[in-house]
Length: 228
Ligand code: ADP
Ligand code: ADP
Image (cartoon, rainbow, N blue to C red):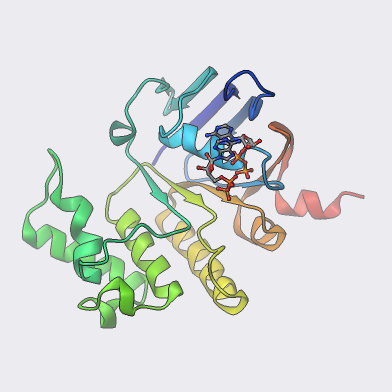
C-alpha cells in the first residue's frame, strides 16, 4: 500500500497545448480515486505517467513520499489493468494469473504461486475456469483474469484504464460492484480512469474531474451530487 502524490504535473506532446497542465492530487493510502472527463482531457496520459509508460514533462510524482519521475515502470510496483485485458492467448487462466510471479528477482516457489492463484481466483469467481484459455472466456471473465493477475503481484497500487468499457451494460454493472468490493477488501490505493459518469459516481472515495488537461475539481461523489 502506498500514498501517491502528483505535484503540478505537466505533459506536453511536441509543442502543442499541454495534454496535462499542472495537475496536483494527494492520494491517501488505500484511497480509491476516479479520474473522469471527456475524451481527450488527459486521463490516460496522467495514468500512463503514474505507471511510467509516459515521461513527465515537469512536476513531481511521489510514491510514499519518494520522487519516482525517473524510476522504471517495473520498479514502481504498480499493477495496471487495461481495457483490452492484455492476456496471453496460449496460456490457461491459471498460467495467465501465475505469470507475473514467475518473473524477475522475486520469483515465488510453485507452492506460493499456487496459493496465490487459488486465493485470487476464489475472490474473482474464476475457480471453475482455471484450465480454460482466454479465447473461450466471456468478456467479464477475461477482465477478471486481468484483475487476478494484478492482485497476485502484491502491488503498492492498482491503476485501472477504462477496464469495463468493452463490456455490455449488465456486465459492467456487475463488474463495477466486484471491483468496488475487491478494492475495499484489499484496501489498496487505486486510480481508476473512466469517461462513464455512473462508474465515477459509484466506485470511488473521491472523483477528480479533468477538463482540457486541468483538474477542475476533486470531491467525494456525495459532495458532487449535492452541488447545484
Ligand atoms: P483512448 O483515450 O480511449 O485511449 P485515444 O484515441 O485518445 O483513445 O488514444 C489511443 C492511442 O493513441 C493512445 O495510445 C494515445 O497515446 C495515442 N494518441 C492519442 N492522440 C494522439 C495524437 N494526437 N497523436 C499521436 N498519438 C495519439
Ligand atoms: P483521454 O484519456 O482523456 O481521452 P488522452 O490522455 O488520451 O485523453 O489525451 C489527452 C490529449 O493528449 C489529447 O489531446 C490527445 O490527442 C493528446 N495525446 C495523447 N497521446 C498522445 C501522443 N502519444 N502524442 C501526441 N498527442 C497525444
